[in-house]
Length: 438
Image (tube, rainbow, N blue to C red):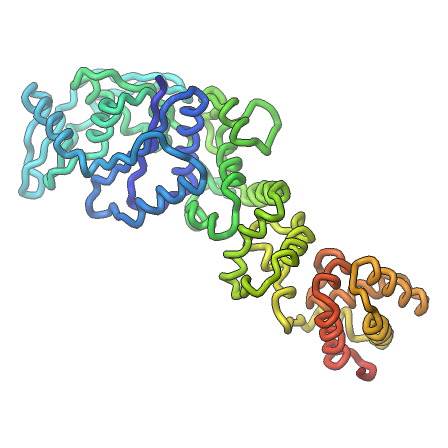
């Protein structure tokens, strides 16, 4: 049976590259009906932390990458590693060495040629004579990465090791250990690295790289999973929106490329917006509430049905959950800010002042403040004034929202309500417009 593992070192937050490695292992296991295990490689006692361990596990859970076995902590398996160290010492394949005044154990490398068939890159050959003897057990009693990795993969009966290509250099040491311990090596597949849009290796200078950051920015887990799945793998056609079920059905290592993939934030934003559109409005309301709360909105004081209508109005406009508030903030405050250049362009003319006065008077007399009645009322105003509706639309939008871009004008006014719409119109007429006041 196929058995793969994701084995992060808890020396940092779960980043996009690690998440992709976890995803490919998870998809490979699910495709083959196999086992996906989580192993925490916490033998670096100085840099490993519980905070990073919790972040890694929380990130995997948020992404929906459930593991079948684990988490297994290497720091709790010292007895097992020591048993294998003794086997190598007794066979003369390892020896003690002085490391900073303390005893460590080193592996004695042979001069063999080491070769393996990478499932993504093809055959890779190493000259073992160029590799120095390396430490198995450090002076502090903890195993090194290469040694613990081999022992655990053998004990767990891992069949395939799917990991980043930065581990290619570790493979000959691990192959030498498998041979020395007379253990069968798993099959290896090394994934190409992820690059930033500038072609350099993806790093913090390119923006968010940790899964936690994307969660906080308001990306949906299904969208992020879809996006990172396509950073190196293709489903076999031109599909870009691929469900988890489709990924599991179609995922093979043969479809993973050997060249580096580029992270494209524009594409991620587009993909997230598509997933937002597919999400039921009731679910979006639930997901958006924490973001609104963090922005200072008292969500307990917002009527659920009203918020749902607002979400439906903007559903095809916002790209992230955080973006929703940025686009709709004027709905959640009594006073809004007006940019001077926008006011100068759209509000400071006598003709506009006259139009807005007419609008204020007409709206004041409306008993039903609904989209249909609002449209009829405003179109009646421009007909009486013998101007096109476009002459009124943008100044009125600026007056009631403070911005030049919003969702439909009539729908916006209906959701703002009569009192707030009239209040903002009055404010603009008193503050910015040239002629008279109400």
